[in-house]
Length: 195
Image 1 (spheres, helix red, strand yellow):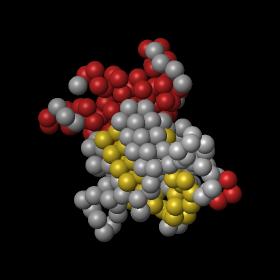
Image 2 (cartoon, rainbow, N blue to C red):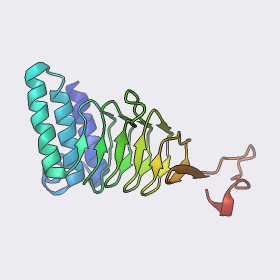
Image 3 (tube, one colour):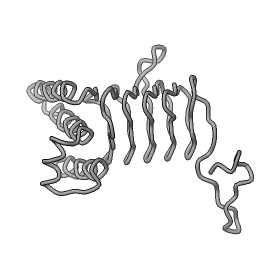
Image 4 (tube, rainbow, N blue to C red):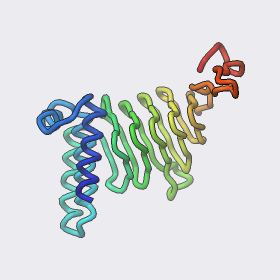
């Protein structure tokens, strides 16, 4: 378990700073709020697994993260390595949310339950990008490589390689064109040549 937190922090460091290493990691805690927010979340979540005393210290680290970085990560959220937070202010990730590897989340994003379905949270698959102000709620899934536009309200499943935008969000386009059997790029079903 100890190796997994160090591997996750190493991937988070690379995602937020473009490099790795102990010196860069220590500097990033002070100068890169995105890495600091993710690192404090991982420490708080890990402490949370050590009984009552660990939960108490985990709560203190969680509160420090809220104060320093202005973001709220529930300690029960499952976050894979490589989370990138270019501007972590106002990011809210609720309990039981699942976030895959190499996801990028911009400022003022909320991910969690909706008022009608308190028990089920979104699943964000690997390599997704969620732009500023987006709200993602309910028992939905963002497929791998999905993109959520700024200020979108998402309460529907977003397929792999798709763009969801609007209030409420609709699926606007596929982002990657499929390869035809002959190996050529098939863009015939793409509006305006959008891949």
